[in-house]
Length: 322
Image (cartoon, rainbow, N blue to C red; front, side):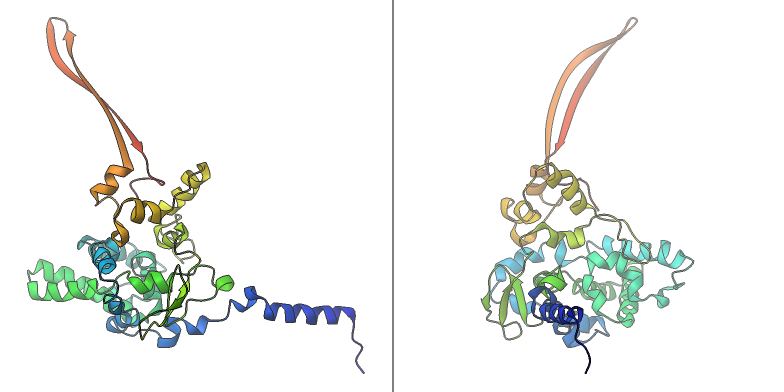
């Protein structure tokens, strides 16, 4: 008969304890995410359908209207400039780097686009490389149609790019939980917010609490700490969240992104920044002092205006950003 030692007993107890503690159990659920249950998208149409939130409009029309005016509703197309900038970043970056593995647009894979897509289209990570190629092909096609004044083709591709956005399900499901080994993975069929209960939607019949929905870290997932060092070729873009942490909260600031950009501004899910007069007026304070004098140079007397301007950043982060 095998001798049972104290070490063996303690090891068994520890294993059982891990199996029943919430922290360990929280890691369970990766196979229940939207992407896991639906499988990786193989076309843009499939990716759009995977995170289709049009069903939210019936009950949340006002919120949807606010959102549709925000930059979140057009993170890929932008004003047209965003899509063009992605093309420039690809050509001047990925395709020019010796070890990227991509020499022409047809070589592009999902990983090549995540420097931009991590924030502008995070759900691209839930698609195959075929979607990355289709996506880049559409951006090139959009630019060509613009140059060739092909309004019909331009409009068609513009609508395709606008269909790829940061919508209800991206924020209230996919990005609603950051610490997945602690709090579990966001599950398909669930909308995450500030309450728990039933949800009158056949595709998303349940509401659960997101531990970060009212916290700045929700926004910080895209709005940046600085270099994206987890990428094979790190990029530097938005750093609003980084300066918010190190320059604002470190000095005792307590307001969150949501409090300033949604509640105090009255913009709700519009969440504008510099494109909103409400936000720009709140962000910067100007003190201006002006007076006139005469400047004498020998016998020449020249009228002169002196204007002193003091500009104070009243936001919780550096501006401009991105």
